[in-house]
Amino acid sequence: MEIHQVKTPLANSYVVNHDGQLLVVDVGVGCHEFVVGFIEQKLGIDRSGVQLIICTHDDLDHIGGLRHMALACGAPFALPLASRSLRRKHLNDPTGWLLRFGTSVVEASRPRAWRMYGSPARRDRLARRPRTKIRLPPRQISKLRPIQRLQQGDRLPGFNDWEVIHSPGHTWDSCCYLHRPSKSLLSGDTLLGSASKRRVVLPSILSNRAQMRDTVRRLHDLKVESIYPGHGSVIHGQHLLDHLVR
Image 1 (spheres, rainbow, N blue to C red):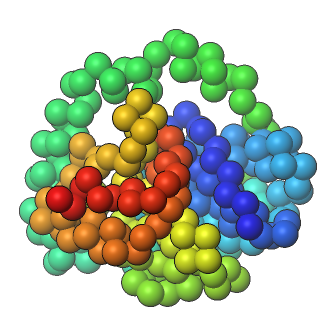
Image 2: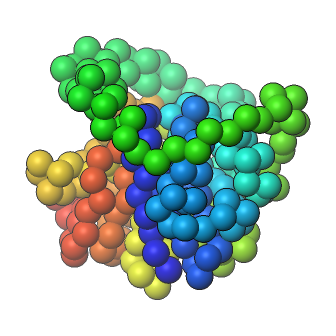
């Protein structure tokens, strides 16, 4: 089993390779061509090798290209239980939208937001990444439906080594995906990776601080040794979350 990080214009996508059978995690809006390009040009695997596509939560930089990827590869996709469900989010976190709005405004005002998304140097780096141009019929994209709604403790269809961990805090629908044999965690925006600090950090944009604290404690108990975040660098080592639960 190999986990490959694909840096796209919006967020990290991941391609998990199980002997040529591919699991794709998180595809942002307009980013499916970068993920397909990585699969075909870097891994040398036909896109038909994609067996399942999932996301960690329903922010557009993680879900916006999911259906495009599914149609391009002829593969099914699955979503977290509450993704694109305002009713479930409101019932379980009624004031989450307010905190999300406030923390998003603060984050957008920071200089690092420009460096992450708008700088010319970043655009130049992305322009050199593998990309496969794909034309898709919009009507077929809109008709696609998930094969499963993923809940706490579920196993991913076709990838039974991967377990769903519900992880509210950044958003109520957020899920991480745990591979127990390798102690690896695909964390989406629940946990981020700081290359400069060489450690895992919490996201600045939150929907519920209390839920995030509970999520971090539960993830800490998993004793993972590799964290693959939605933004930032992959972090390896032991005791990766100790500094977040003190």
